[in-house]
Image (cartoon, rainbow, N blue to C red; front, side, top):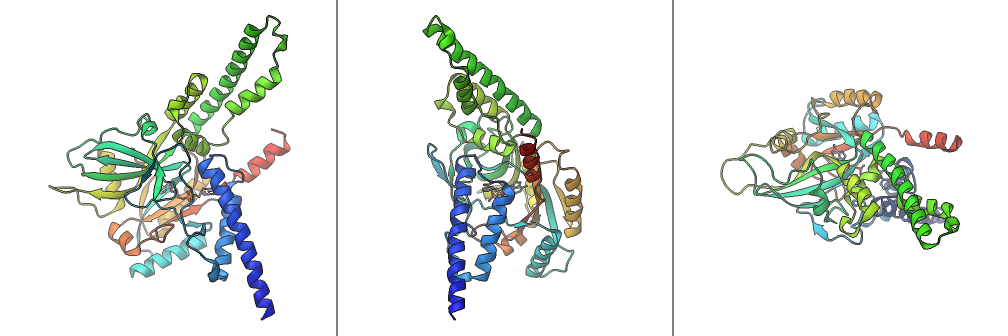
Length: 385
Ligand code: NAD
């Protein structure tokens, strides 16, 4: 019995350690847009936590990161309550795990293997946004936050070219909460980093000029210090996801001069693909019959919302596996970064039957590709970049 008690105590200690690490990672990633560890390291920590909780169910609390949506609204933003919770996605990391998930879905729906209709989508590496339209007019845009409460980013969303201020058409609902991913395309990301470099040069030049104006002998100008300050002010962005998150979540009206120029460029680089629907209410008249999530996308497209061209409707998991293979090979051939494939049960009635946990829907799963960034970063470190 002593041994069991010791095991339990060790598990509890490791659990507390992992929770603290994951919470610290989440704060850096979601609130500060400055991750401290790679996504693969973060995913590994979360997986270890899940395994530990599976082995020691007494450790699970509602506050555990395995039970809730990561992220919190950052200071400085007004907060908004989502009409319906914005959840995360469960992950699988191998084809076997994906097949096991598919078998569970088929069993829970009481259909044969191979018979579930799926919507297979590219997992866009950006950040989630909820757009609330009332009678076709955009009234609010919010980040996911902790899933219930997000940050109000309406002012910034209104500046994103692809987010319509008004939906088109005559079959518009009274209320619709459109969900999607805001991202920066790879090509725009490269241009943004070039702009950051130019802004650093201009900030140094400004500082030199100011120093020159202060003393006739501009020898007093500390070039090195000005360069460090410029690097801190206009740092190169680590990846499109963080640049997008910081771009959407910035307080533009508090900026001026070069900072405003950088901020506006970052917002103008943002794009959107819609990938879900929250609240949807029609009170009167005829409206479109929606049986499948793919029907919702067709309607979104008609209303003028951008739908990803990479989505596929497939019968059974084999079609999804083809897409996984395809994008495994052509990961860098599309306009944005992707870290996986999202699989969704297409029929809305089946989605409702399967329901959700506190963290994620049971009718969707994200297949994650093996990480590439670890090796890239190691190489970068080795060659001293
Ligand atoms: P997630 O990114 O794994 O999945 C949920 C999100 O996927 C949704 O909220 C949505 O925004 C997005 N998404 C993209 N394309 C989609 C599509 N076609 N359909 C539906 N949703 C789509 O989950 P998460 O909880 O947001 O965060 C976990 C991710 O963030 C992981 O990739 C993790 O590695 C990373 N993360 C990293 C750190 C770190 O420190 N490096 C910390 C926290 C989270």
